[in-house]
Image 1 (tube, rainbow, N blue to C red):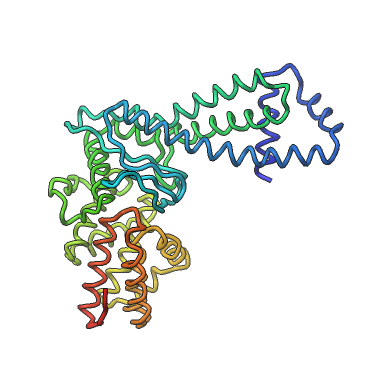
Image 2: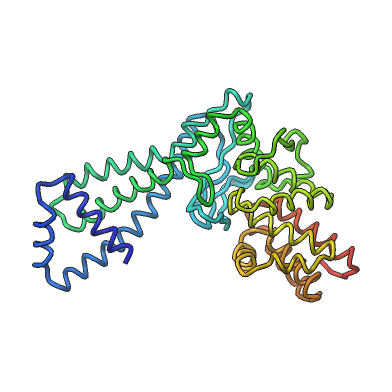
Length: 373
């Protein structure tokens, strides 16, 4: 139904902008179309909306890639939905990974240099510019191929979706995560945000290459003077430090940092909040506080853990702790560990996998659980 609405809406918009036909004339003409022909148009509109939307996502991320390369950035990974192409020492590989609220992501490492000199505008807005550029090309083609009904439908919807994607990403918004426009404004206003932005790209690159946080340079882990839980970039850096505490098994520090995030529900972005809840549940279970852990594990959190356990090893670590420390199911906990150990190379964030396996093994040792790799 959404595709039909988009198709009809796109048709009306394009008729108003690019033809002399009135909407009333268009609707009158529509009455004369045979039912089977109408169904065919509707089916093709749905198909065009799906294909056009997919292509615009690819184009958007390709825009970030091209803009990044032209700005001196180096390629790390290119994700569309849950599939990521990443650069490794053995060449390009495809792995599964996903982030709620995003259809794709292009990660690159910035060139070395001070935060004041970081080139961020073109890289962040490259996707928006590509969506608009390819939409303009589609409109030009539509003007020349308007005699072909099906070509017109596809080109019209493709252009409409491109403009929609450009607006959704270019107009500064903070929904599930901050969009490109919002990120660009924040980076423009704050040198500290630029420093965190560049740092996050470098840390993510090292994690994908298989380095654990505790093995990274200490200079990557610092806390801003003020922790503004509403600031997307500040909380990113805050979580890098919290993750380092986890990896070093400095559980009291990690507990304090994740509990502070959970206490600021409604201020931090939803994605960061639910991630903090997952880690806080893990730490609560290590402390033996089952009651508080059960309270936080509502259906939404449980569904999130289950869904992202397929692409994020940290969620399998939490599942392992729930099985062992909440449900007293030692066999299930060991099975979760073995599944991660066996499939570890399938995950994108290899450094995170190594950390999670080590933390699970540490938990087994503390509880006297015998396991085999």
